[in-house]
Length: 348
Image 1 (cartoon, rainbow, N blue to C red):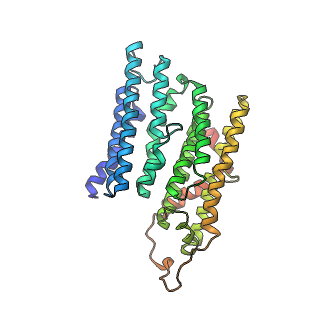
Image 2: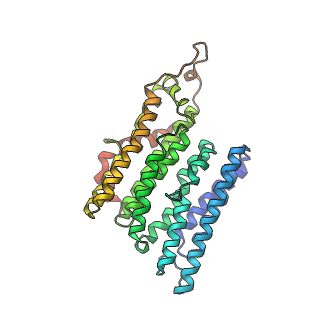
Image 3: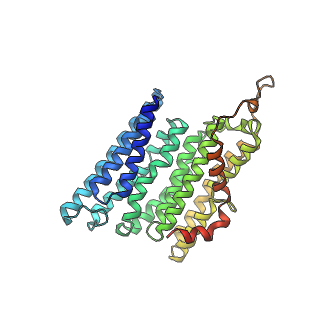
């Protein structure tokens, strides 16, 4: 892709997210989301591959539907209350409609149907943007609207997302689909606790973005999109395969890694709110997610890919991957748990 066009598209992504962050008027927020959607579409379709075209079409239709629902929610609220402000949504029907639209935008269950298929059709770089950056703007709206949203609906969406995210990833062999179901499960944890402790939602979102960034960067270095192709990673770079192992276990929420922190704090908060059954269901579904991460860990570090011995040694080639970004994100993905009290005091 032309560097000038790429710069414009990346700048538009940043502009759309910033507009949504700073906006308090429904039309400005909606405009930011639209800029975000339109900026990523050329990045998705740049491969000129039928699967990429199909994924882009599905993404555009889904996001256009969600944007129309969100705009309708804002207009309905303005019609009934006379207020265009984001935080003045006093109409319960408008609040529920806005939550449905945002759930469709980020891929919460039962509106998750598009996310695995779209992510499967993209390359790893665009998939990384879709899994991380594109979640920021909708969550900026949710973190402003959370007092006005129905807590029972949030809880139902969150628990359903953790169940579908756990079960859906069990029989997958494509790494991008596994990461899509991982995203659905993590979003479920964030949405469940949104009404009771929005600071935990923010903490979980930040950690999820860091861990997903590390995972996608590692897969890009290994050039792996299937479970059987990641088996050669231990021969290419033993150190990176160990980092992959720890990052995947951290995504699964295994102590003493960073990913355990948000799950521990969320289960603690749900218990404080006397929501014992949702907490139990989510803890059990976290075990399902951990199972398919363990499958990936087994393929990464404990299996040998059958390669002919007369091939060139790939580890002797000059590395061209972003080592500083990978080092920083991998360190944060693995070693943040001891800093839990400090992080918890810094987040308001």
